[in-house]
Length: 303
Image: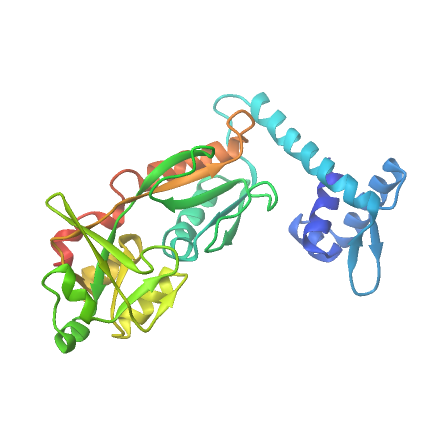
């Protein structure tokens, strides 16, 4: 199993040295494990040159099977463990850049500090990933609704607000109703409200066509542009709550509500969930919850 783990790490990292460092073993030890696996299989798995490593046809065929066997090994340890066994091992997760930087990095640090013997690989991407192809154990997705074919657990909620700097509002005027946004620089997200912002008040939803000089695929980039007085943006409270509390940013149209989205943990299988994945999901659900910390008292501090 260790030899297969070395092989998979080498294939993923493209470097024997990097794989050895990741597994906390010497390069010589990793080389020995790899050689023993090739001897056992009776085939060379890697083409080795001075510049790079690449898979042989036999290596391509063996890689997927080695991944499967390693996953089965994790599952076997999980089902064989005592009910109160501590989580261990490595988990590979992905989430958006803005959520990763503002919330998940600190959550991951707390989790690995609480559970010795665990490790987390974070992949920050502003796109949906194929969990199987990219070997993701858990994807954190923020969406109004998930595809019904996905296996997921809701961890929390994501609320958004329209916000700008007081300096921008003083210069351009504060919108009093949704249609006033047409005359403003509205900074938009590529995937959420690119052309229309839907705002609800007392059960009535108004959709406003918005436009502005800046659009981005990352909420953090939009927030930084807003902080530079470039305009108004629809931003998640998990990101802007500290800036609203400090008064650096102000909520625009505070009586109108932006539709709430869910924060979900998406995974591949309920039946073969490793203990560390289950433990991490429980941890995130407890940490964030239905009333996440970033939303507490937001109305009193931001208006």
